[in-house]
Amino acid sequence: MKEAANRGKGKTLLISAGIEIMLIICIIAANLNPTPILYFIFYNLLYGLVFSLLIPLYCLYKENGVPASGRVLAEVGFKKPGIRQWVVLAAFVVFSVGGQLIPKMAVGEQIPWRLLPMGIVPLIMTTFFEEFLFRGFVQSRIDQQFGWVPAILVSGAMFSLYHLGYPGFRTWEDILLLFAVGAGFAAAYKLSGNNLMVSFFVNLPNAFVTYMLKYEQFPVMRGSSTIAAAVTLVFIGLILLLYRNADQRRQ
Figure 1 (tube, one colour):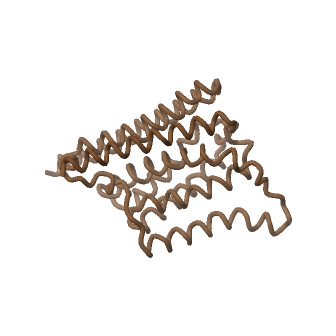
Figure 2 (cartoon, one colour):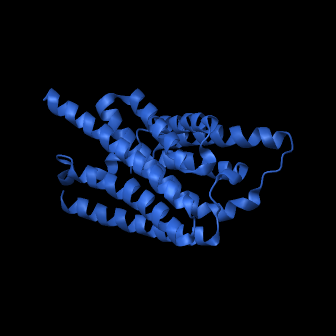
Figure 3 (cartoon, one colour):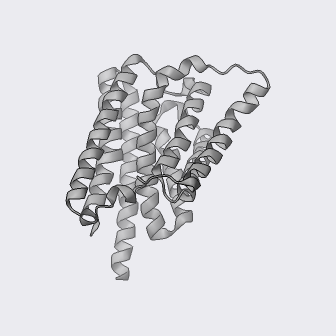
């Protein structure tokens, strides 16, 4: 029994490390020659749909007892929010977004709101992939096998290190800051009772604000980025719908 548990822990860490490495490789490849079609293939399809969504779903599907339980999506945080979840969400959004905007607005610094529309759809897509993988899949599994403190630390570290794929986020200062931010998202996920909606909507406004304030560090957002992200979001919805229907048939 103990050996099986240890093998399960080792497998979780190995899968998480393997996915993390592939994320970094895909994002680097996407940014080496960021033409729309290559960016879509390496970023939206490989980094996003394959390594951040399909492989985690496959791993969950193959776990003993999970396919028959009909609770797979609940295991990664697809749950209806209650009062507790709304309180956690509001507190973290006020802290993270207000902490960035209020000091700048207080000294009269102009916020480039004009940049936001072009980034909305791509950032919704990226935020979903981040939260589904780092919180719903990795953190939930690490929490079950190692405890909530290692889970938050691993989730925050993976969120931070995967940004090494982006040319604009490769300084030690950015990586350390992103670790703190990722640990904050992980804490919101834990405090909400592992509710993916909470961590998603804590991350999303933070992503919007960070993009406006540090847009030069992000990949260039074009109209093609919005179209590609919209197509990818449709694929996400279809995959989750098919998975839910298949899950329900096994109950």
